[in-house]
Image (tube, rainbow, N blue to C red; front, top):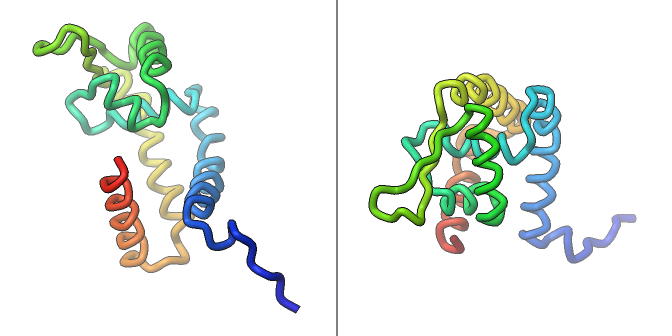
Length: 144
């Protein structure tokens, strides 16, 4: 006898949340072992490869409220991992970038994150992984 499918078994928002939770919770232990909080990791990963982002952009990317990110960026600046300065076009806006120390701190984690992603997705064809990412990017762009 097969178990009947419930609402969440076919509800996209639940499936996305569940997949994200399962995939990321495994990696969070790696982040913690490197001495970073989950939010510090998100900020550093978001800044990686970028010249700079505004605090507002960071808040959107890391899924947190702007005041929370502002405080976090302040602590991260004190630790020497990020640099913050006023935007030249608007003094009310702060821009943030990784410092060389921040880049050194996050670089090994970025490699470990890619390796973890590869391990999690190993049972899927590369084309399927690319297609999934493209669909998610389109969904985010349409709702962002």
